[in-house]
Amino acid sequence: MKQLKRMLVSWSLVALALISLQANAATQPTTRDFNHSTTGFALSGGHAAAPCETCHVGGIFKGTPRACDACHATGKRIVATPKSNNHIATNSACETCHFNTATWLGARYNHGNATPGQCLTCHNGRLSISKPASHNAGSKATNSCDSCHRSTAWLPASWNHVGVLPGTCATCHNGSTATGKTGSHTGAKATLACDECHKQTSWLPAAYTHRNVTPGSCATCHNGSLSTGKTGTHTGLKGTLACDSCHRTSAWLPASFNHTTAVGTCASCHNGSLAVGKTGTHVAPKLKGTNACDDCHVNSAWLPAAFKHNTAAVCSSCHNGSIAVGKSTGHVATTLECNQCHVGTTTWLGALGAMPSNHIPFNAGVTCSNCHTGLAKVNVNVLHSFSVASSTCATCHIKPNAYTGNNQSTKSSHKGSSGNNCAQSGCHTKGAASYLNWDE
Image 1 (cartoon, rainbow, N blue to C red):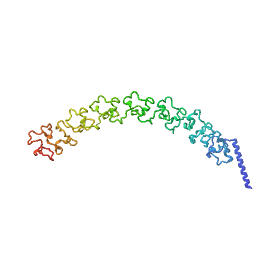
Image 2: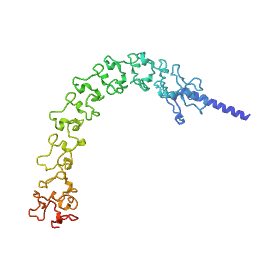
Image 3: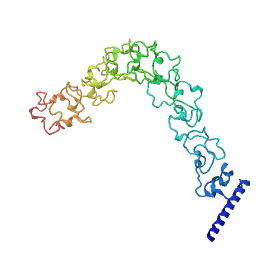
């Protein structure tokens, strides 16, 4: 009995406390001694003016919901303003779009959870702004908003061409669904697909891509009707060749003929009619008058020019003073070919093995190396044991001999000589000796 009385007293005290709390809240709704921020849920906006019991129903504090839709929805234990009937259909939390607790205005939908292509689910004129009157025809009327617009702003807007097949521009750009070709599109412009010249980001700048053009077929379009043709300066070879033989697809200039397949056939074009021919300085029988242009010239420019000796025959067949430069007046008397002394083809200077003016008269068929071996001009008499030993003595020792520098001249009072062989009768014997002295 005593325990029951205690329970009744306790419940009475609780009831009186609640009545007092309600009375104070009604008379002083904005005055609180308790710092609600310590609970982790700061009171702001409409929450700051709401009576405590609005959320803490029945004096229950523990477990009070914090999520917006736990209160701001119909049928909840805590009654708060629910979504209106014309609210956008969404299951997202209130705070996804609403950013302050003082008013519902200023809401902004977070499109991060929006499904691509489903804009009309909300943008239908009832839940949210729909397409304006300018979007009543063509692709603007049928396509989803996000085909052109971004979720951050309506403008700027542009059609997203990702996935559009090349060459299918006219499917939309027909003047009805989307902007079509203007009146300036005549000739080739009237027949080609838009993306043969234009980019998806802008109409200008525009230039034909030439990506599907077969080499050599330029005149199919560049005929003066469909597209710009050859000008009046295109005569001769220029008048017969395809444009891409000289020009590139990026610009008309610079232009130059591609000589890749023209080796050795220069005169078939460079004849003075189809293309520039040989000038007056190029006359026969000189090489300039008879050889192909590329024997001296390169295909990038006429100058510098020099004969390429890679296919040259015997030197004297050209360097005879008629066809090409021959031996000069003061040249050493010799029948040797030029390349036996002159080692380069760019200059005559730097010749090796040139004979002195007082040298032994040259014998046809005898080369310098018969006597002079190695890189240096060696005195002949030190070589008698191996180079000249096989030759007839009279090759050098004969009277009269203009070269007397090493006493080669045979003396008029010579004794015992009955012929031209100095070694006869065992006088000057050949052998391992070097013939350094006459009395060996």
